[in-house]
Image 1 (cartoon, rainbow, N blue to C red):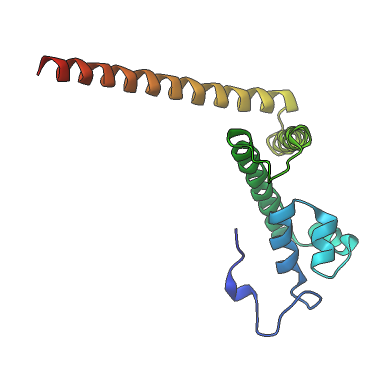
Image 2: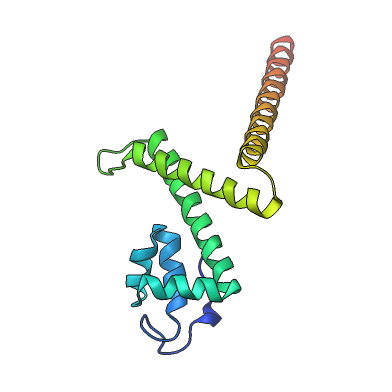
Length: 156
């Protein structure tokens, strides 16, 4: 997610009043608050204080972190599917981070929805199970159509 170009103004750079733009862009890339604050030439405490005082910034922060974790998940999947000796990845740490993020999201959703954390985790697991069942059903349907096509081709 790139932030809209209109947020940046001529001459804007890290360290100016638009530090938030740089902070959020770097947060998407790294999911690291301290590193993002340093990149934006501010301190983490300022970022946290702004998050607490500005609901729009807090929402943008959450969106940036969510996108950062989606990026990590995609990078991990790509690495696991095609490991390259040129590229290093600490798979165990990546999985641990994704698990911790999943739990944090579940806690947050539970607080918002006034549900227990376990209820939210159960609903996420149910949704994932349903997706797997649909994928298996689609694969079976596709395999059946392929077999039927093969029989038709043999008869012709």
